[in-house]
Image 1 (cartoon, rainbow, N blue to C red):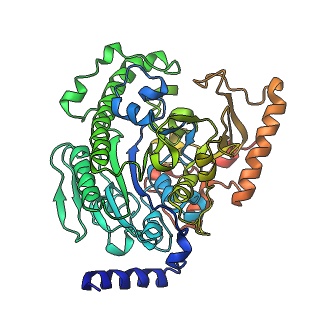
Image 2 (image 1 turned 90 degrees about the horizontal axis):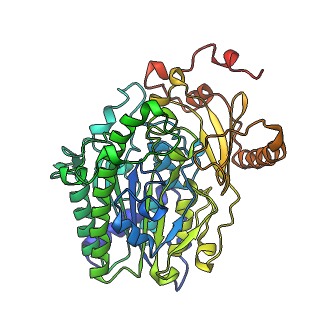
Image 3 (image 1 turned 45 degrees about the horizontal axis):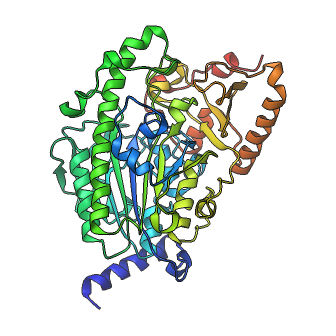
Length: 492
């Protein structure tokens, strides 16, 4: 046995023993064709901004072409629409109040069993490129101090090939740390060299089973830093806005949207190059290719920017899955919702890897392979702790809710807050909550929400309860809940 292979196996078995993983054979299904996995993750790309979703003003030709060969999930829901919580839920298949990442820049526990470790234990070569945002910082440190530090080898959660920065949004002056914690610089706009790195990893491992995550920073703000040739594709004055953008914000919204679109089209260009590389290497049919985003961006809908809110611009994200060998190359749209914790078990199911007991999400792979609709009536949405751009002083509030194929229903600590019929009111302009005409519907949706919360053992407590339980500090003093908050917001 070659020396390097011997030490690799020894290290893998050591990790399995110390983290109490199941044995390798417990992960895999005998005689199953082992597919590769390429998971492409954008940051803050909302579902509505795609050509294949009917948007005629954004230029996404490569993703539209990919969609024509993929499953299109029309209601892919960010369970907690914030960066680090989404990533932790995706990698573990768990809900935020289980893994504890419901607030940015907090460390995912080493004990978490993640995608990288599961695929590694199943014999895959694993790689991660781009934004990580799960190392966080230790209590007492500056809240953002970890963003420019290397992630220690024992906190890389099973990923071997490693070209990672904890967090950056300076896409044109971007560095990363490699497997040896050596600081390197991406040349130019980082989306493009990151894609080249992904293609290199794929090319070197084309004869093996591999699992790769490529995690881009854009189109997350800053909105005006895409390469000039992509910015020149969009004239802000000619862009149409969603009808829920208030008139007083429309000029600034068009300007922001033009910059956002430029980032999106740059990513589309990079994705096209990566997809063509899979084709040229002859491994497209055997590769599960996924494209999605962590969460959306309000982009001045309702007069606000960014995420955390329970409206569709924030919680709905694109999701494409292409796997020709099992699913063919015909496009198919799925209407029933899929939540963040469901992604990992579904991908494991498509890969023929058994779902570990730590995973809480639902495996939809059987429905996907059978060509049927997802067995899902609703996806849970939540915000245990509002913070940063939606802090308490800025109107932030704790909430729990559900998104079904048709309806959105949300409660805050005072009681029912939002109810929308998204078929008749796609811009969520008419809140039907507590309207007597819809009392039966509201009662039905309340029952679904309570069932979901009971399944999760979620008591829906005030934010301070979760911060105390996990020994977290608020990263900004103006994010702290005022002492009189509950008395001012109690039920009438």
